[in-house]
Image (cartoon, rainbow, N blue to C red):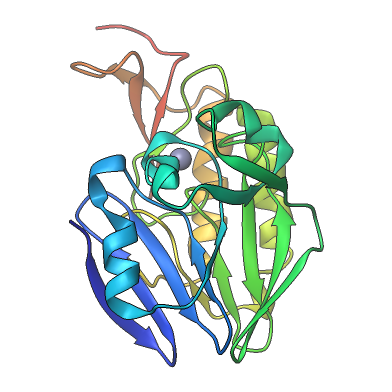
Length: 228
Ligand SMILES: [Zn+2]
């Protein structure tokens, strides 16, 4: 089961060593960003913090983010990832520029396709927070193998985030260290471009169908690998 970690006023990290979710508790409702693995039991942890109705917003539809949806029944997620959501979940679209208010927080949706086609980030402009899902991380590995990923679009999305980087101070990724500083946007971008340009050599992963590529700062799991 995930543990809760207080981050700032009315804002919690729900996390284990695998993946992280974010809970903001307002006056009339709570906002939950992502739902973890099915066995993360995020619903129970949310209910240990608040009894308010919960609105679920999704950074993207990968299984380690969408596994807990069956306990909530509904979510808002970009249409590019609707095909990743299990049947029986009520889905509503997230779009560029959508705004959500919760307590003292205002989140704006920024579309960042690439890690998945429906990946989005959430930005809190006043508090200078960026929630990039899996698209920005310290060290990684960032998963970029499989049919529902696109390296070119990922690089374009990192450039888009790079354009916002001087307006945020704190980046809250779903994996590994959190919080991190906005310079990791540029570090991930530089390494992703090096990988695209064939400047990094891949090493076959021992059990996943991909190879591991080490950039200067970031590891990626990607498929265009040279086997040993
Ligand atoms: Zn993911």
